[in-house]
Image (tube, rainbow, N blue to C red; front, side, top):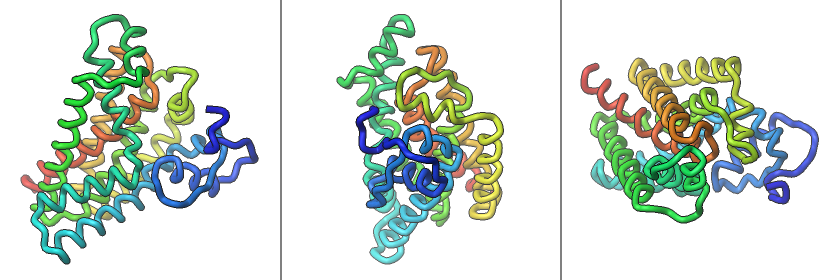
Length: 260
């Protein structure tokens, strides 16, 4: 990846690195590029950046549901489509690739070779369908409770799920994913999680905190699955963690909304 225009060698700038991270993970026309080392140094700030994406998705949901008077299911599909589009379908290949690797029989090396293979198997396609369908159902459910802010929360804490996996995984090197994993340590993870928890509580009260717990749980589970199957984690594993983290946050918030 050393020839990729995303990663140019220059001095560290926090603002430029944050904008570079947003450029990397979305299709927003920011076009700020920096080295992979400098960009991933601020990986722990990723949830705060995607708070912005969550707000935009919630606006999409508000326009669809409140202004266009579309039903909750149609609105949920549009919100999910918006999230996938604005993030450039960034993590969907990770969902499929990791699922294919987990499904195949063999040792960790063989499984990881399947993860890195560009072709997609039935397991990957089926898993993507399930994750996408369940996520849409989750968005639909929080909208049924008029908990529009849940869209903002689930997008933010999806990155907390990714950070959880990064913290608890051994990196596959070389690879872009290894930079994100190596840059995540106990201190910046704890700092990020505390700030995310405060934001989630301010936005959604106890339900918001429960959504964060769901995302952290998902990140830990994906880490365990990756360790048992591959011994290591790469960008595809982190991508799976992000998508499953969003889904689990919606599931936990949906259950909390019923009981609370």
